[in-house]
Image 1 (cartoon, rainbow, N blue to C red):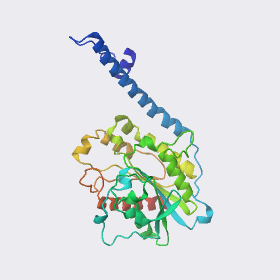
Image 2 (cartoon, helix red, strand yellow):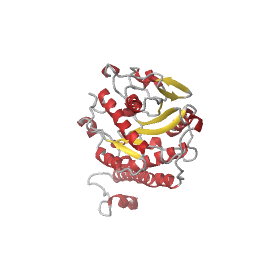
Image 3 (spheres, rainbow, N blue to C red):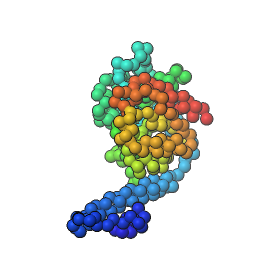
Image 4 (cartoon, one colour):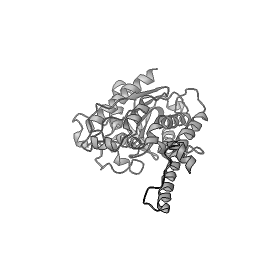
Length: 319
């Protein structure tokens, strides 16, 4: 136990029996502390080694269209990944009166259903993740992004693959190393739906917005970039293109209450700024308005985020 303690704290801080405490009480406290540090060391080893191993095992694939050739002129498919700010917590009542859902031009695909974009405008209470109930997707950046993409290419039609789940950690997006198509994982469910949707068109890009939960944890925040890279490399590999455009959002402003609950927010945001994935672009959100809950983007914030996603996506697609 002393060796474990010294590996974490150094040789001078080994705990000694406090005056007035029974030996068994002191040793119990020491054992509990050492066990806690053992867990921390194991977690660090997992974050340091497993994602790196996954990354080193991937095979880079020549850039190819992600979808069958017969649909090369069909619909453009975009994958939405992340947590609650990608799901959306905006309010329908706050949408501008001229906002269009372009029904028939914008659709979503999930579990074999090619659904109408109006499902993204249902009120809902925002409590149920999309894979359980498609109608719970609220005013996120998806429709705003699709609208902006159509404005620059009015002859195109868009399908959104809404994989995001509120409250998820970046580690929950890692694939099963033995079976990336495992539908017991978020990665596998998303991948399965994305591949199935290619019978309707071609996958043109990935949108990703996540990290609020990981800002609470020192290890997950410190290793966010490495885990995120592993997720994206694996997804691109399974979709058949290492140049599939990726646009991801950096975490934005939160209330003082939520910042206090996320002491590693700045570390995580630095991790997001330093991502070195090719064919990728970061979108900044610090200036976007948030709701009264102090954590989620408001409807106006989500509309702006979708437009920023579209600007970056178009830029990547021109490369």
